[in-house]
Length: 328
Image (cartoon, rainbow, N blue to C red; front, side):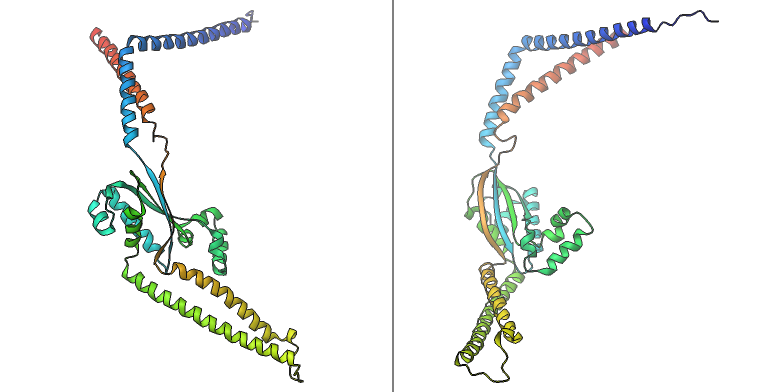
């Protein structure tokens, strides 16, 4: 039989003692690190002060000279020109990135091309306008939603490019106006001979449709007036059907209602059909308040101090390793 007595209590006391000793050592190391950091900044206070003043001054200079303004143009691409519009904006963006100021000035017509830093186009999601009075678009949304999330469907390029309104956003480093960028940009976008030919034909067709609808409405009014006069005169015969039950008369009235609705839509379309890419609104010179804008004078002093500390740590590490190498 074994005569050994378990030492569980003693082992637990030793473990607790070592744990408390380790925790105490950990806090001692933290206190030592804090003290050495304070000592480091006190010992190098002149360099630290110079770096803070230098960083603040340089940051102040950058904040006062680095401006960024957000600008937005809302447009409606007509006559199936949406893909043409997107390709043109992508072309301009590529020219801005490559620094092709000659193209931007001579082809696009921007007199101060260096002021524009970025341009992009995005659709303005309006699903209600997209499916308004167009059952085929509603069925398309339903069909696409069955195979994926509705949000992804609405943001998909196939769907989003068919929205009515699109937003052209560009960033400038100076305050601009419509004559500097907006007008030459829209003139360039409307310079396609093919789409301009479509615009002329489409505008003329829409005008003719409005005239024809007005003629049909006038003819319907004459027919309704004839029925009304017949009813007032009381000249009824066995072949005349009671008006409220006359299906053909109801169809005529509904046709007139549809034509009147169409006429309102056509006249509204006529306003935007005078151009291929029609501007509906523009908002210029919105101060772009990103995290770095106006804050360089606060960021740079910390960055300079961080670099100084890194250099100090590296030098100390290098010296220690050099001494160890010499001892060996």
